[in-house]
Image (cartoon, rainbow, N blue to C red; front, side, top):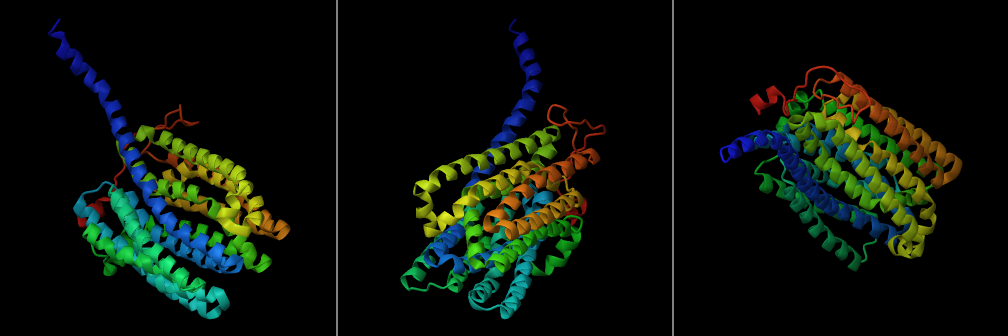
Length: 463
């Protein structure tokens, strides 16, 4: 009987191996997500602090000017992520350190060039503007290169599974920004130019610490090489991201033309109330693509379940936070957070929550399209959803003012969920990387199961 014990252990080992693999994957994902939440919390606090200070101290008009500059920044950021950081996360997650450093040098150089070009365009646009908006755009144009570079360091660290380094870099930004805001308040500089300048300049300080952390210098001459090598992903990801940003920006400009800067401030205040959800969703975006790439490589049969769980988690979080806001805002929280503007903002909360729930329910599908490298389908989905969002939002603004534009966005959010899941279903049917499990997906797929390359062979050989 004693001789049977080793045999039983040997037989049990293969059965335990898959479970141990799943446990390791889950454990790694939880740790990464924890750093993602911590990092995004710090990053969002820096943006949230400026937004809340402007809306409380300067009123709706200057907050509207700040909002115009912020959506312009978001547009540039989406372009930078599409060209620079998203190809890095898809193809160089969990790669060798030497390979990662060479890729990061080109990635961060690309982000810096996007910031330089975008900053020049923003400064040129400021010449055609006037008043408060012109001041906000001048400050943004001066600081846009540092903002783009700082964001690229964050994504580079998460691609390497070094979330703690991204968290440290964002802490540097926060630690330098808060004293700057206090100084502006003490000196009485209640002008949106100085607040945008302080926000962007402190991001540049944090970006300057990135090379010390990564032991990598941005390589600006490598931009053309980086974009060319990843031409199958980068331009499409950039077009996808900028189409979404452009829709948001055109919506904001349209609201301003139809309803005025005060209406922009009210709509942006409703967006600001979604701050905790923004932290959560952006944290997931930092972690989900590299984690999804690892799941696809190590356990491809679990990839559809990964997508479903990610979407369910985002939608549930949005519903929970929406309930908190609807109950807490009329009981003093609204006035404490937003000041007098909260009363005009409160009717926008419910449709804004419904919009976020719709987007959250498609979050896993959007991540999956990127991980699969299905850039054409991902771009197609985003173009359709961005167009729907813009049209319905502007029609709603014309018919019902600020409440109408958010209601239109809510409808567009659910239309987007249907479109993105449909595109993912088609992408999985076409792919040979994933063997569909009928328990989690409404159709089966025949064909061989082949783990994808994390980095293309040419990149691994030359990087």
